[in-house]
Length: 477
Image (cartoon, rainbow, N blue to C red; front, top):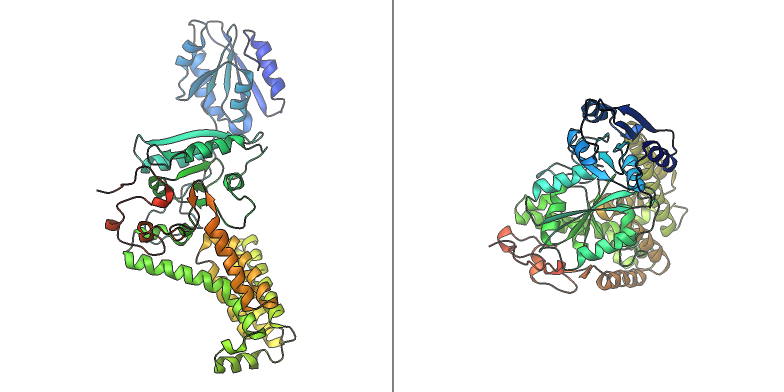
């Protein structure tokens, strides 16, 4: 580790050697008392106007003692720090904070005048609610922590800043409530973050692999949200949260599978309405996964599953189809996935037209030409809509749907039942940060069932979930 020397030119050259890029600039100037200064800053990410106003203009008339502490008092920036290592100075310059070097002194002053390029706080497009707060996280970790601090005005809130990524040095905020967070979870998350050895972290999703007990499992093991109200509510239940700089998506652990069937809006509507919508989401997800598979299995192996009138209708529709039921369903499913991917990647003004063309023109033409049947189009369309009833599980459930369809086409209903049993086994046996993933159903926790797929009124939720393991159980008197 190299330290700042009393020779201004030597320190400046050593710092420039560490930061040889052309956009790292130096600005030398001399104060009225004869003291030489040199500001070193990264041009694209430093607010040069603030640098000139708060630093250069404030120090030009300086005629005081040659001490870093006295000079720092003259700088009008609210963010100041004295640094004595060259590595620390280089790190601050790359973060957008200029450093001020002096002659005849073995220290430098770091000035917080970084340039911020921020979008406004708005409602996240992936988590829209009719009732409740409309704010969403943005890509700046300081703004996001301020949104959390505004909702949790308590001295128990702990926010620790960690850095992950050798080259990106991404700031990750570890958030939890002291005395409420589950015992040892914050320490375990902190240790896992410090053990991450990766050169670049572009988004908080990079961290989920390292936080998961089974990182290669298809089953999701880390919660995520873009809304500060949901994030703070989870902290209040005893979870630990992570906010990564550059990402609007916050992570929470421990994660329970039932979380993704809940919505922030459930807590702003009557309990009976929340229960109904949660059951509706569960039903929609099951239909989206199993309907194509059971349709194919019934055609190939169990025709008696269809009512006789429905069977006659289906038989008339598939009479001239050249493909087997499983191949037909796979073709329609892949067309749906391609249209979905294309509509997301295309410019938004073209994406709507592409959806209309794919849904109406292409579907109608395929049926008229005899490539696919009308029931196949209806089933896949209904399945595609059902997946979006639980948007946080789209990636996992779309793969499960495809797997169920392949199993149904080769083994039939017995294969579907065996695959379902295997999935349930994995859900029941997965545990992360001390909490069973499938709680409160397996193991059964009676009190936690009041806010699972069912939703009781707030008067019945006087204690925090047992499944999270918070040492502070009572939240309402």
